[in-house]
Structure formats: structure tokens, C-alpha cells
Amino acid sequence: MATDNLSAVLYGINDLRLEQAPLPGEPGPNEVILESHTVGICGSDIHFLTEGRIGPFVLKDPIILGHESAATVVKVGPGVNNFKPGDRVAVEPQIPCRVCDPCKYGRYNMCPDTKFFATPPYNGSLTRYYAHAADFCFKLPDHVSYEEAALMEPLAVAIQASRRADIKIGDSVLIVGAGPIGMASVLVAKAFGASKVLVTDINARRVEDAQKLGAEFSYVLPRGADAEESANKINELMGGAPDVTLECTGAGPAVSLAIYAAKMGGVVCLVGMGSVPATVPLTYAITKELTLQTSLRYANCYPLALSLIADGKVDPKPMITHRFPLEKALDAFECVKRGDGVKVMIKCKE
Image (cartoon, rainbow, N blue to C red; front, side, top):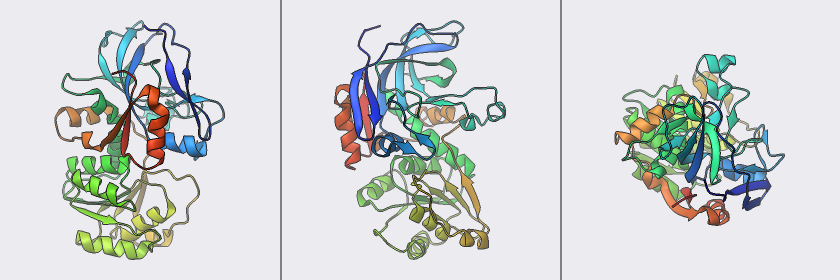
């Protein structure tokens, strides 16, 4: 293992530094030492960079960013029999406690003691080397690339949301927000059997890109537009109100739009996490008898994400717009902050 452990360390708001971090020691039981290969920049990384927090998660001490991860196994610890050095893996970026009630009934995404990458106080994967739990690594078939493996993380978010919303064959689906999670949701909704999908956002270019991933309809939201009027226009385009709406921004006006657009008795799943409290028309949700669902990260979704990619059921690669080496990580984050990229990949190793 090399001595270089260059890492992207966030010290505070807009204070991201490239510096050497301590190398991991010997792997413990059920641990592997990983060499990072490809890491995608997520919207949550940008929230921490520009605001220092996401909801209840507040940056207090420096952390290494990055959680959309693909890597190579370099060492295995005692009891690890399913990996060997040189194996290529997708990395599910969390380690739950495995003993609390949520963990025991299979919803480990709600574990109060989860160590989730790049969420204070835990480090992420924008580093050369790090240790991780072997049972949260997934070996890649030879034909699945490191970039596709890193894209499994936003796909897992979309899978969790689609499961929570119970998308079924033939459903019509509205996706509010055409960022990476919205785009991944287009792919997953179609893979789950949605008959028609409409994606909407205020960013015309992203809406166009999302439609290319398989959405039948698109609608560019005028900035400052009335949410109820926009919902009516969306319903007209879709030929009726959607069975399921996935709200992928967390912004109050977008949540309102989702509620206004939903059909009577429909499902609205809140996927995006906003940074401030939102005022939304709950009276409309009640009078429509909507099912309001929420979705947090993912649990038991990585196997399906890998299967969808490996079997050619989804192709997330068109989401990638930019690539940077780790040495240019600061430039990569500036690219995302400017809104130039959709999914920006950082190469920790070429």
C-alpha cells in the first residue's frame, strides 16, 4: 500500500482542502481496506460545503467528503472469505449497528448509530485508502465499470423511494426535480414498470437530459410560477393526474407542486431533504386522501441496483458530465456549485 493518502477534507463553509490523511491500519474482523477508484459528487456534499449542514446533520469538525464510491480491495481482515485483494467493489457508504430495532427488522437506514460516509462526524471516501465493513461491499462483474458502480448510490436512493411509493406496472409517475436523484428515479421508475413518466425542474437543460433517460414527458417550471397552476399544466401534459409522485428536491414550492398534482388517493413520496422548514398545502393532501410517504437513503437496495446495471435494465452512464482527478477535486466541486455538471466524477485512481 502506498504512503500517499490525499483526501478532500471539509473544514467549514466553502473551506475544502486537499491534504494528506492518516492511512488506515490493519483491517479488523469483517473489514477490508479499500483503494478508492471513482467517487461521485452528491448534492449532500454541496450542502455541507455551502451551508455546513443538512437538516439535523451539522458540520462541527473536519470530515472527508464523498460517498458515491467504487474501489478496489487491497487487504482483507479476519473472517472475510468472500473478497480477496484486487476485487473491484461498489461500496454502500454506511455501517449500521446491526443490533437496534430498525436494524433487526431490516430498516437499517434508520439506525440511530449508523456511520454514514461524509455525514458529520464520519469521514467519506474522497481519499486514497480507507477501511470499510466487508458486508457493505459488493463485488462487481467484469463488465460493470467503476463509474457504473459509483452510480449505484443514487440508483439505490431511487430504488428505496420507488419501493416506498410502491410503483407498480402501469403506474403514471411524476418526478419533481431533475438533479441526479431525479434522473436516477426516471431510470428506476421505468425499470419498475411505470407506463409514463413526467420530469419537471426549473433547469431546462436538466429537464431535457432527464427526458433522454426515458421520461415520456417533461415540463420546465417557470421560476416563481404558481404551484397549483403548474400542477394543472402537468396534469394536462400527462393526460391525467399521476398515480405516484416522487419529490426529489426538498424545496417547499416543489413539495406543494407534488401535492397539487397528485391524483385523488395517489401517493406522494418525499425524497429530497430541504434545509429549511417548508409551508405546504396539507389541506389538499387531506381532501385528496393522499398517501404521504417519506424515504431516507436506502436499505437492502444495493443488490438490486447492481442487478439492474449488470443485466442492462438501466444505463446510468449518460448522467455523467464531467470527470476530474482527485488532485483537481476543488475544481470539481466548483463545477457542481456553478451548476455546470449533472453527475461529476472524481478519479482517485486512473
